Length: 122
Figure 1 (cartoon, rainbow, N blue to C red):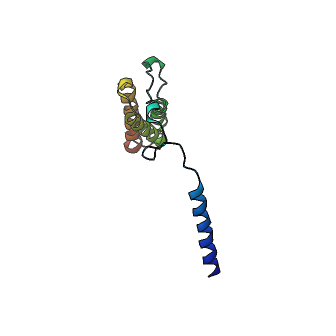
Figure 2 (figure 1 turned 135 degrees about the horizontal axis):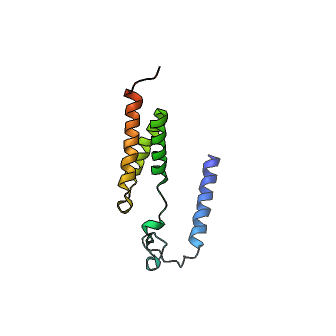
Figure 3 (figure 1 turned 90 degrees about the vertical axis):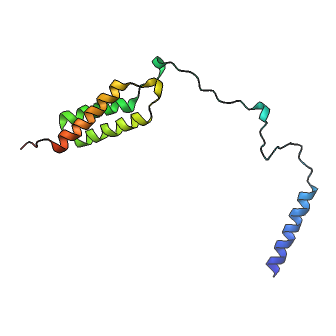
């Protein structure tokens, strides 16, 4: 009982302190403290095709596909196939390099076909 009475006294003191505080002069509209008149939308800067960084995943996929085909590495072919899918899903329309993606896909698929269905040496 004494703990309950002590908690009620503390709550009463907190209410008394809150009511004695002066009101804040900040005007809040709808609970949002930002000022809508000063908001500036982000505008993405235009970058020309020559200034864009290369697609490193596509380059990795090309080398992994060649490595997988030449060295008969299943891991290299799977990395190439996953890199090809990644490049296709993150492709922007204006930077489409169809020849590179097509050759990467051909290396990956042909490497997987030759590794899984080709003749085994020995």
